[in-house]
Length: 239
Image (cartoon, rainbow, N blue to C red; front, side):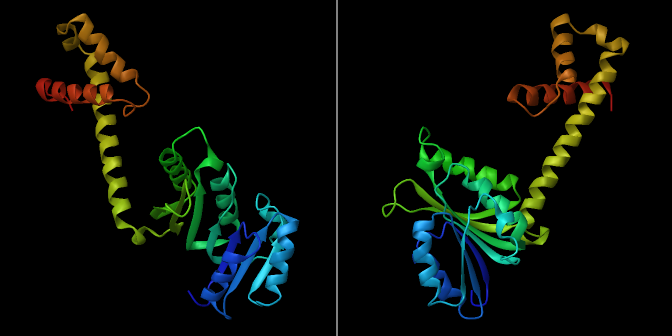
């Protein structure tokens, strides 16, 4: 929007950067990072005619090299054809993007992993973004204009009130975890009691395995065991 500060990674000769320049207007700024010196010359020449563009000829993998040129920004745009483009986006966002700022990333599936289907690559990259405090909101492919390309937009470090549905999901997960942990604790007490002798040996072994399980949610089998535990708790009056 007008007045925004944008960090653009992978500016190339500046064609798309010029459109962003128009959107932010004279009150905004676009900090355009490009590694290639050859196309960087075109970027610099274009920036001479657009005073709200700051061309930076540097490697986006090393944002500390241009930390003195870029302030905190409202939006980060990544258009980088690199296998680690999600990591590069995150590295720059951690240094320059405000909390609750926005991000745009163009995912180029064949550049990330040409051995996987594009849809799989998109989902893997989205998961990496989530791990780096990005909250994806929308994703769209660029077919038929560009093959194996998708654009993901969203919010960086959103506040809890921005996406209340996320907080509800986390609360449900924590409640489920506490119930399962309590069930495991109760079963451990049960297996150490005299009542455990009434079970058959295979059943004892099965329940003992559930107690030793370090990740109670790692398979459907373990969820079934937790259900058995809860039934036994009610049957023998434990809990």
